[in-house]
Image 1: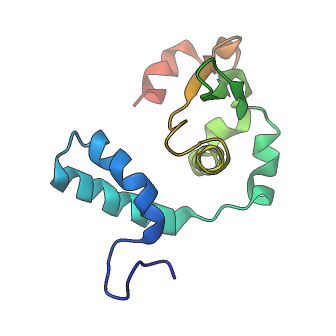
Image 2 (image 1 turned 180 degrees about the horizontal axis):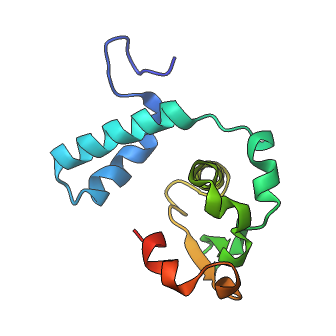
Length: 140
């Protein structure tokens, strides 16, 4: 089953993420518990995402994994000029990013060896699709 025990509210699939959440909360257990609750709620609401559901968005080339750096960390490439139609549909963009990150967590990480990744943000030609006056509204 999903739960470790019948009366245990902690889902087994979140075990791998629990230490990361505690570290992220700077060891504030209440904050980590709140983050865990949000994470579980969002995972149940949004996952699973089938590859077929995001295949057209993957083909845009906005977000993809490409090789590893010298420390064997997988490299996530974000090419903002290829954001295109995703700019108009926030939910579609969120589904794509969740799919790409979940894929990386499942297939590119090696527990105990490779537990983080590198992000390369390609800004080439970004001004051709994003009005410079709107950049502030996209951040945050």
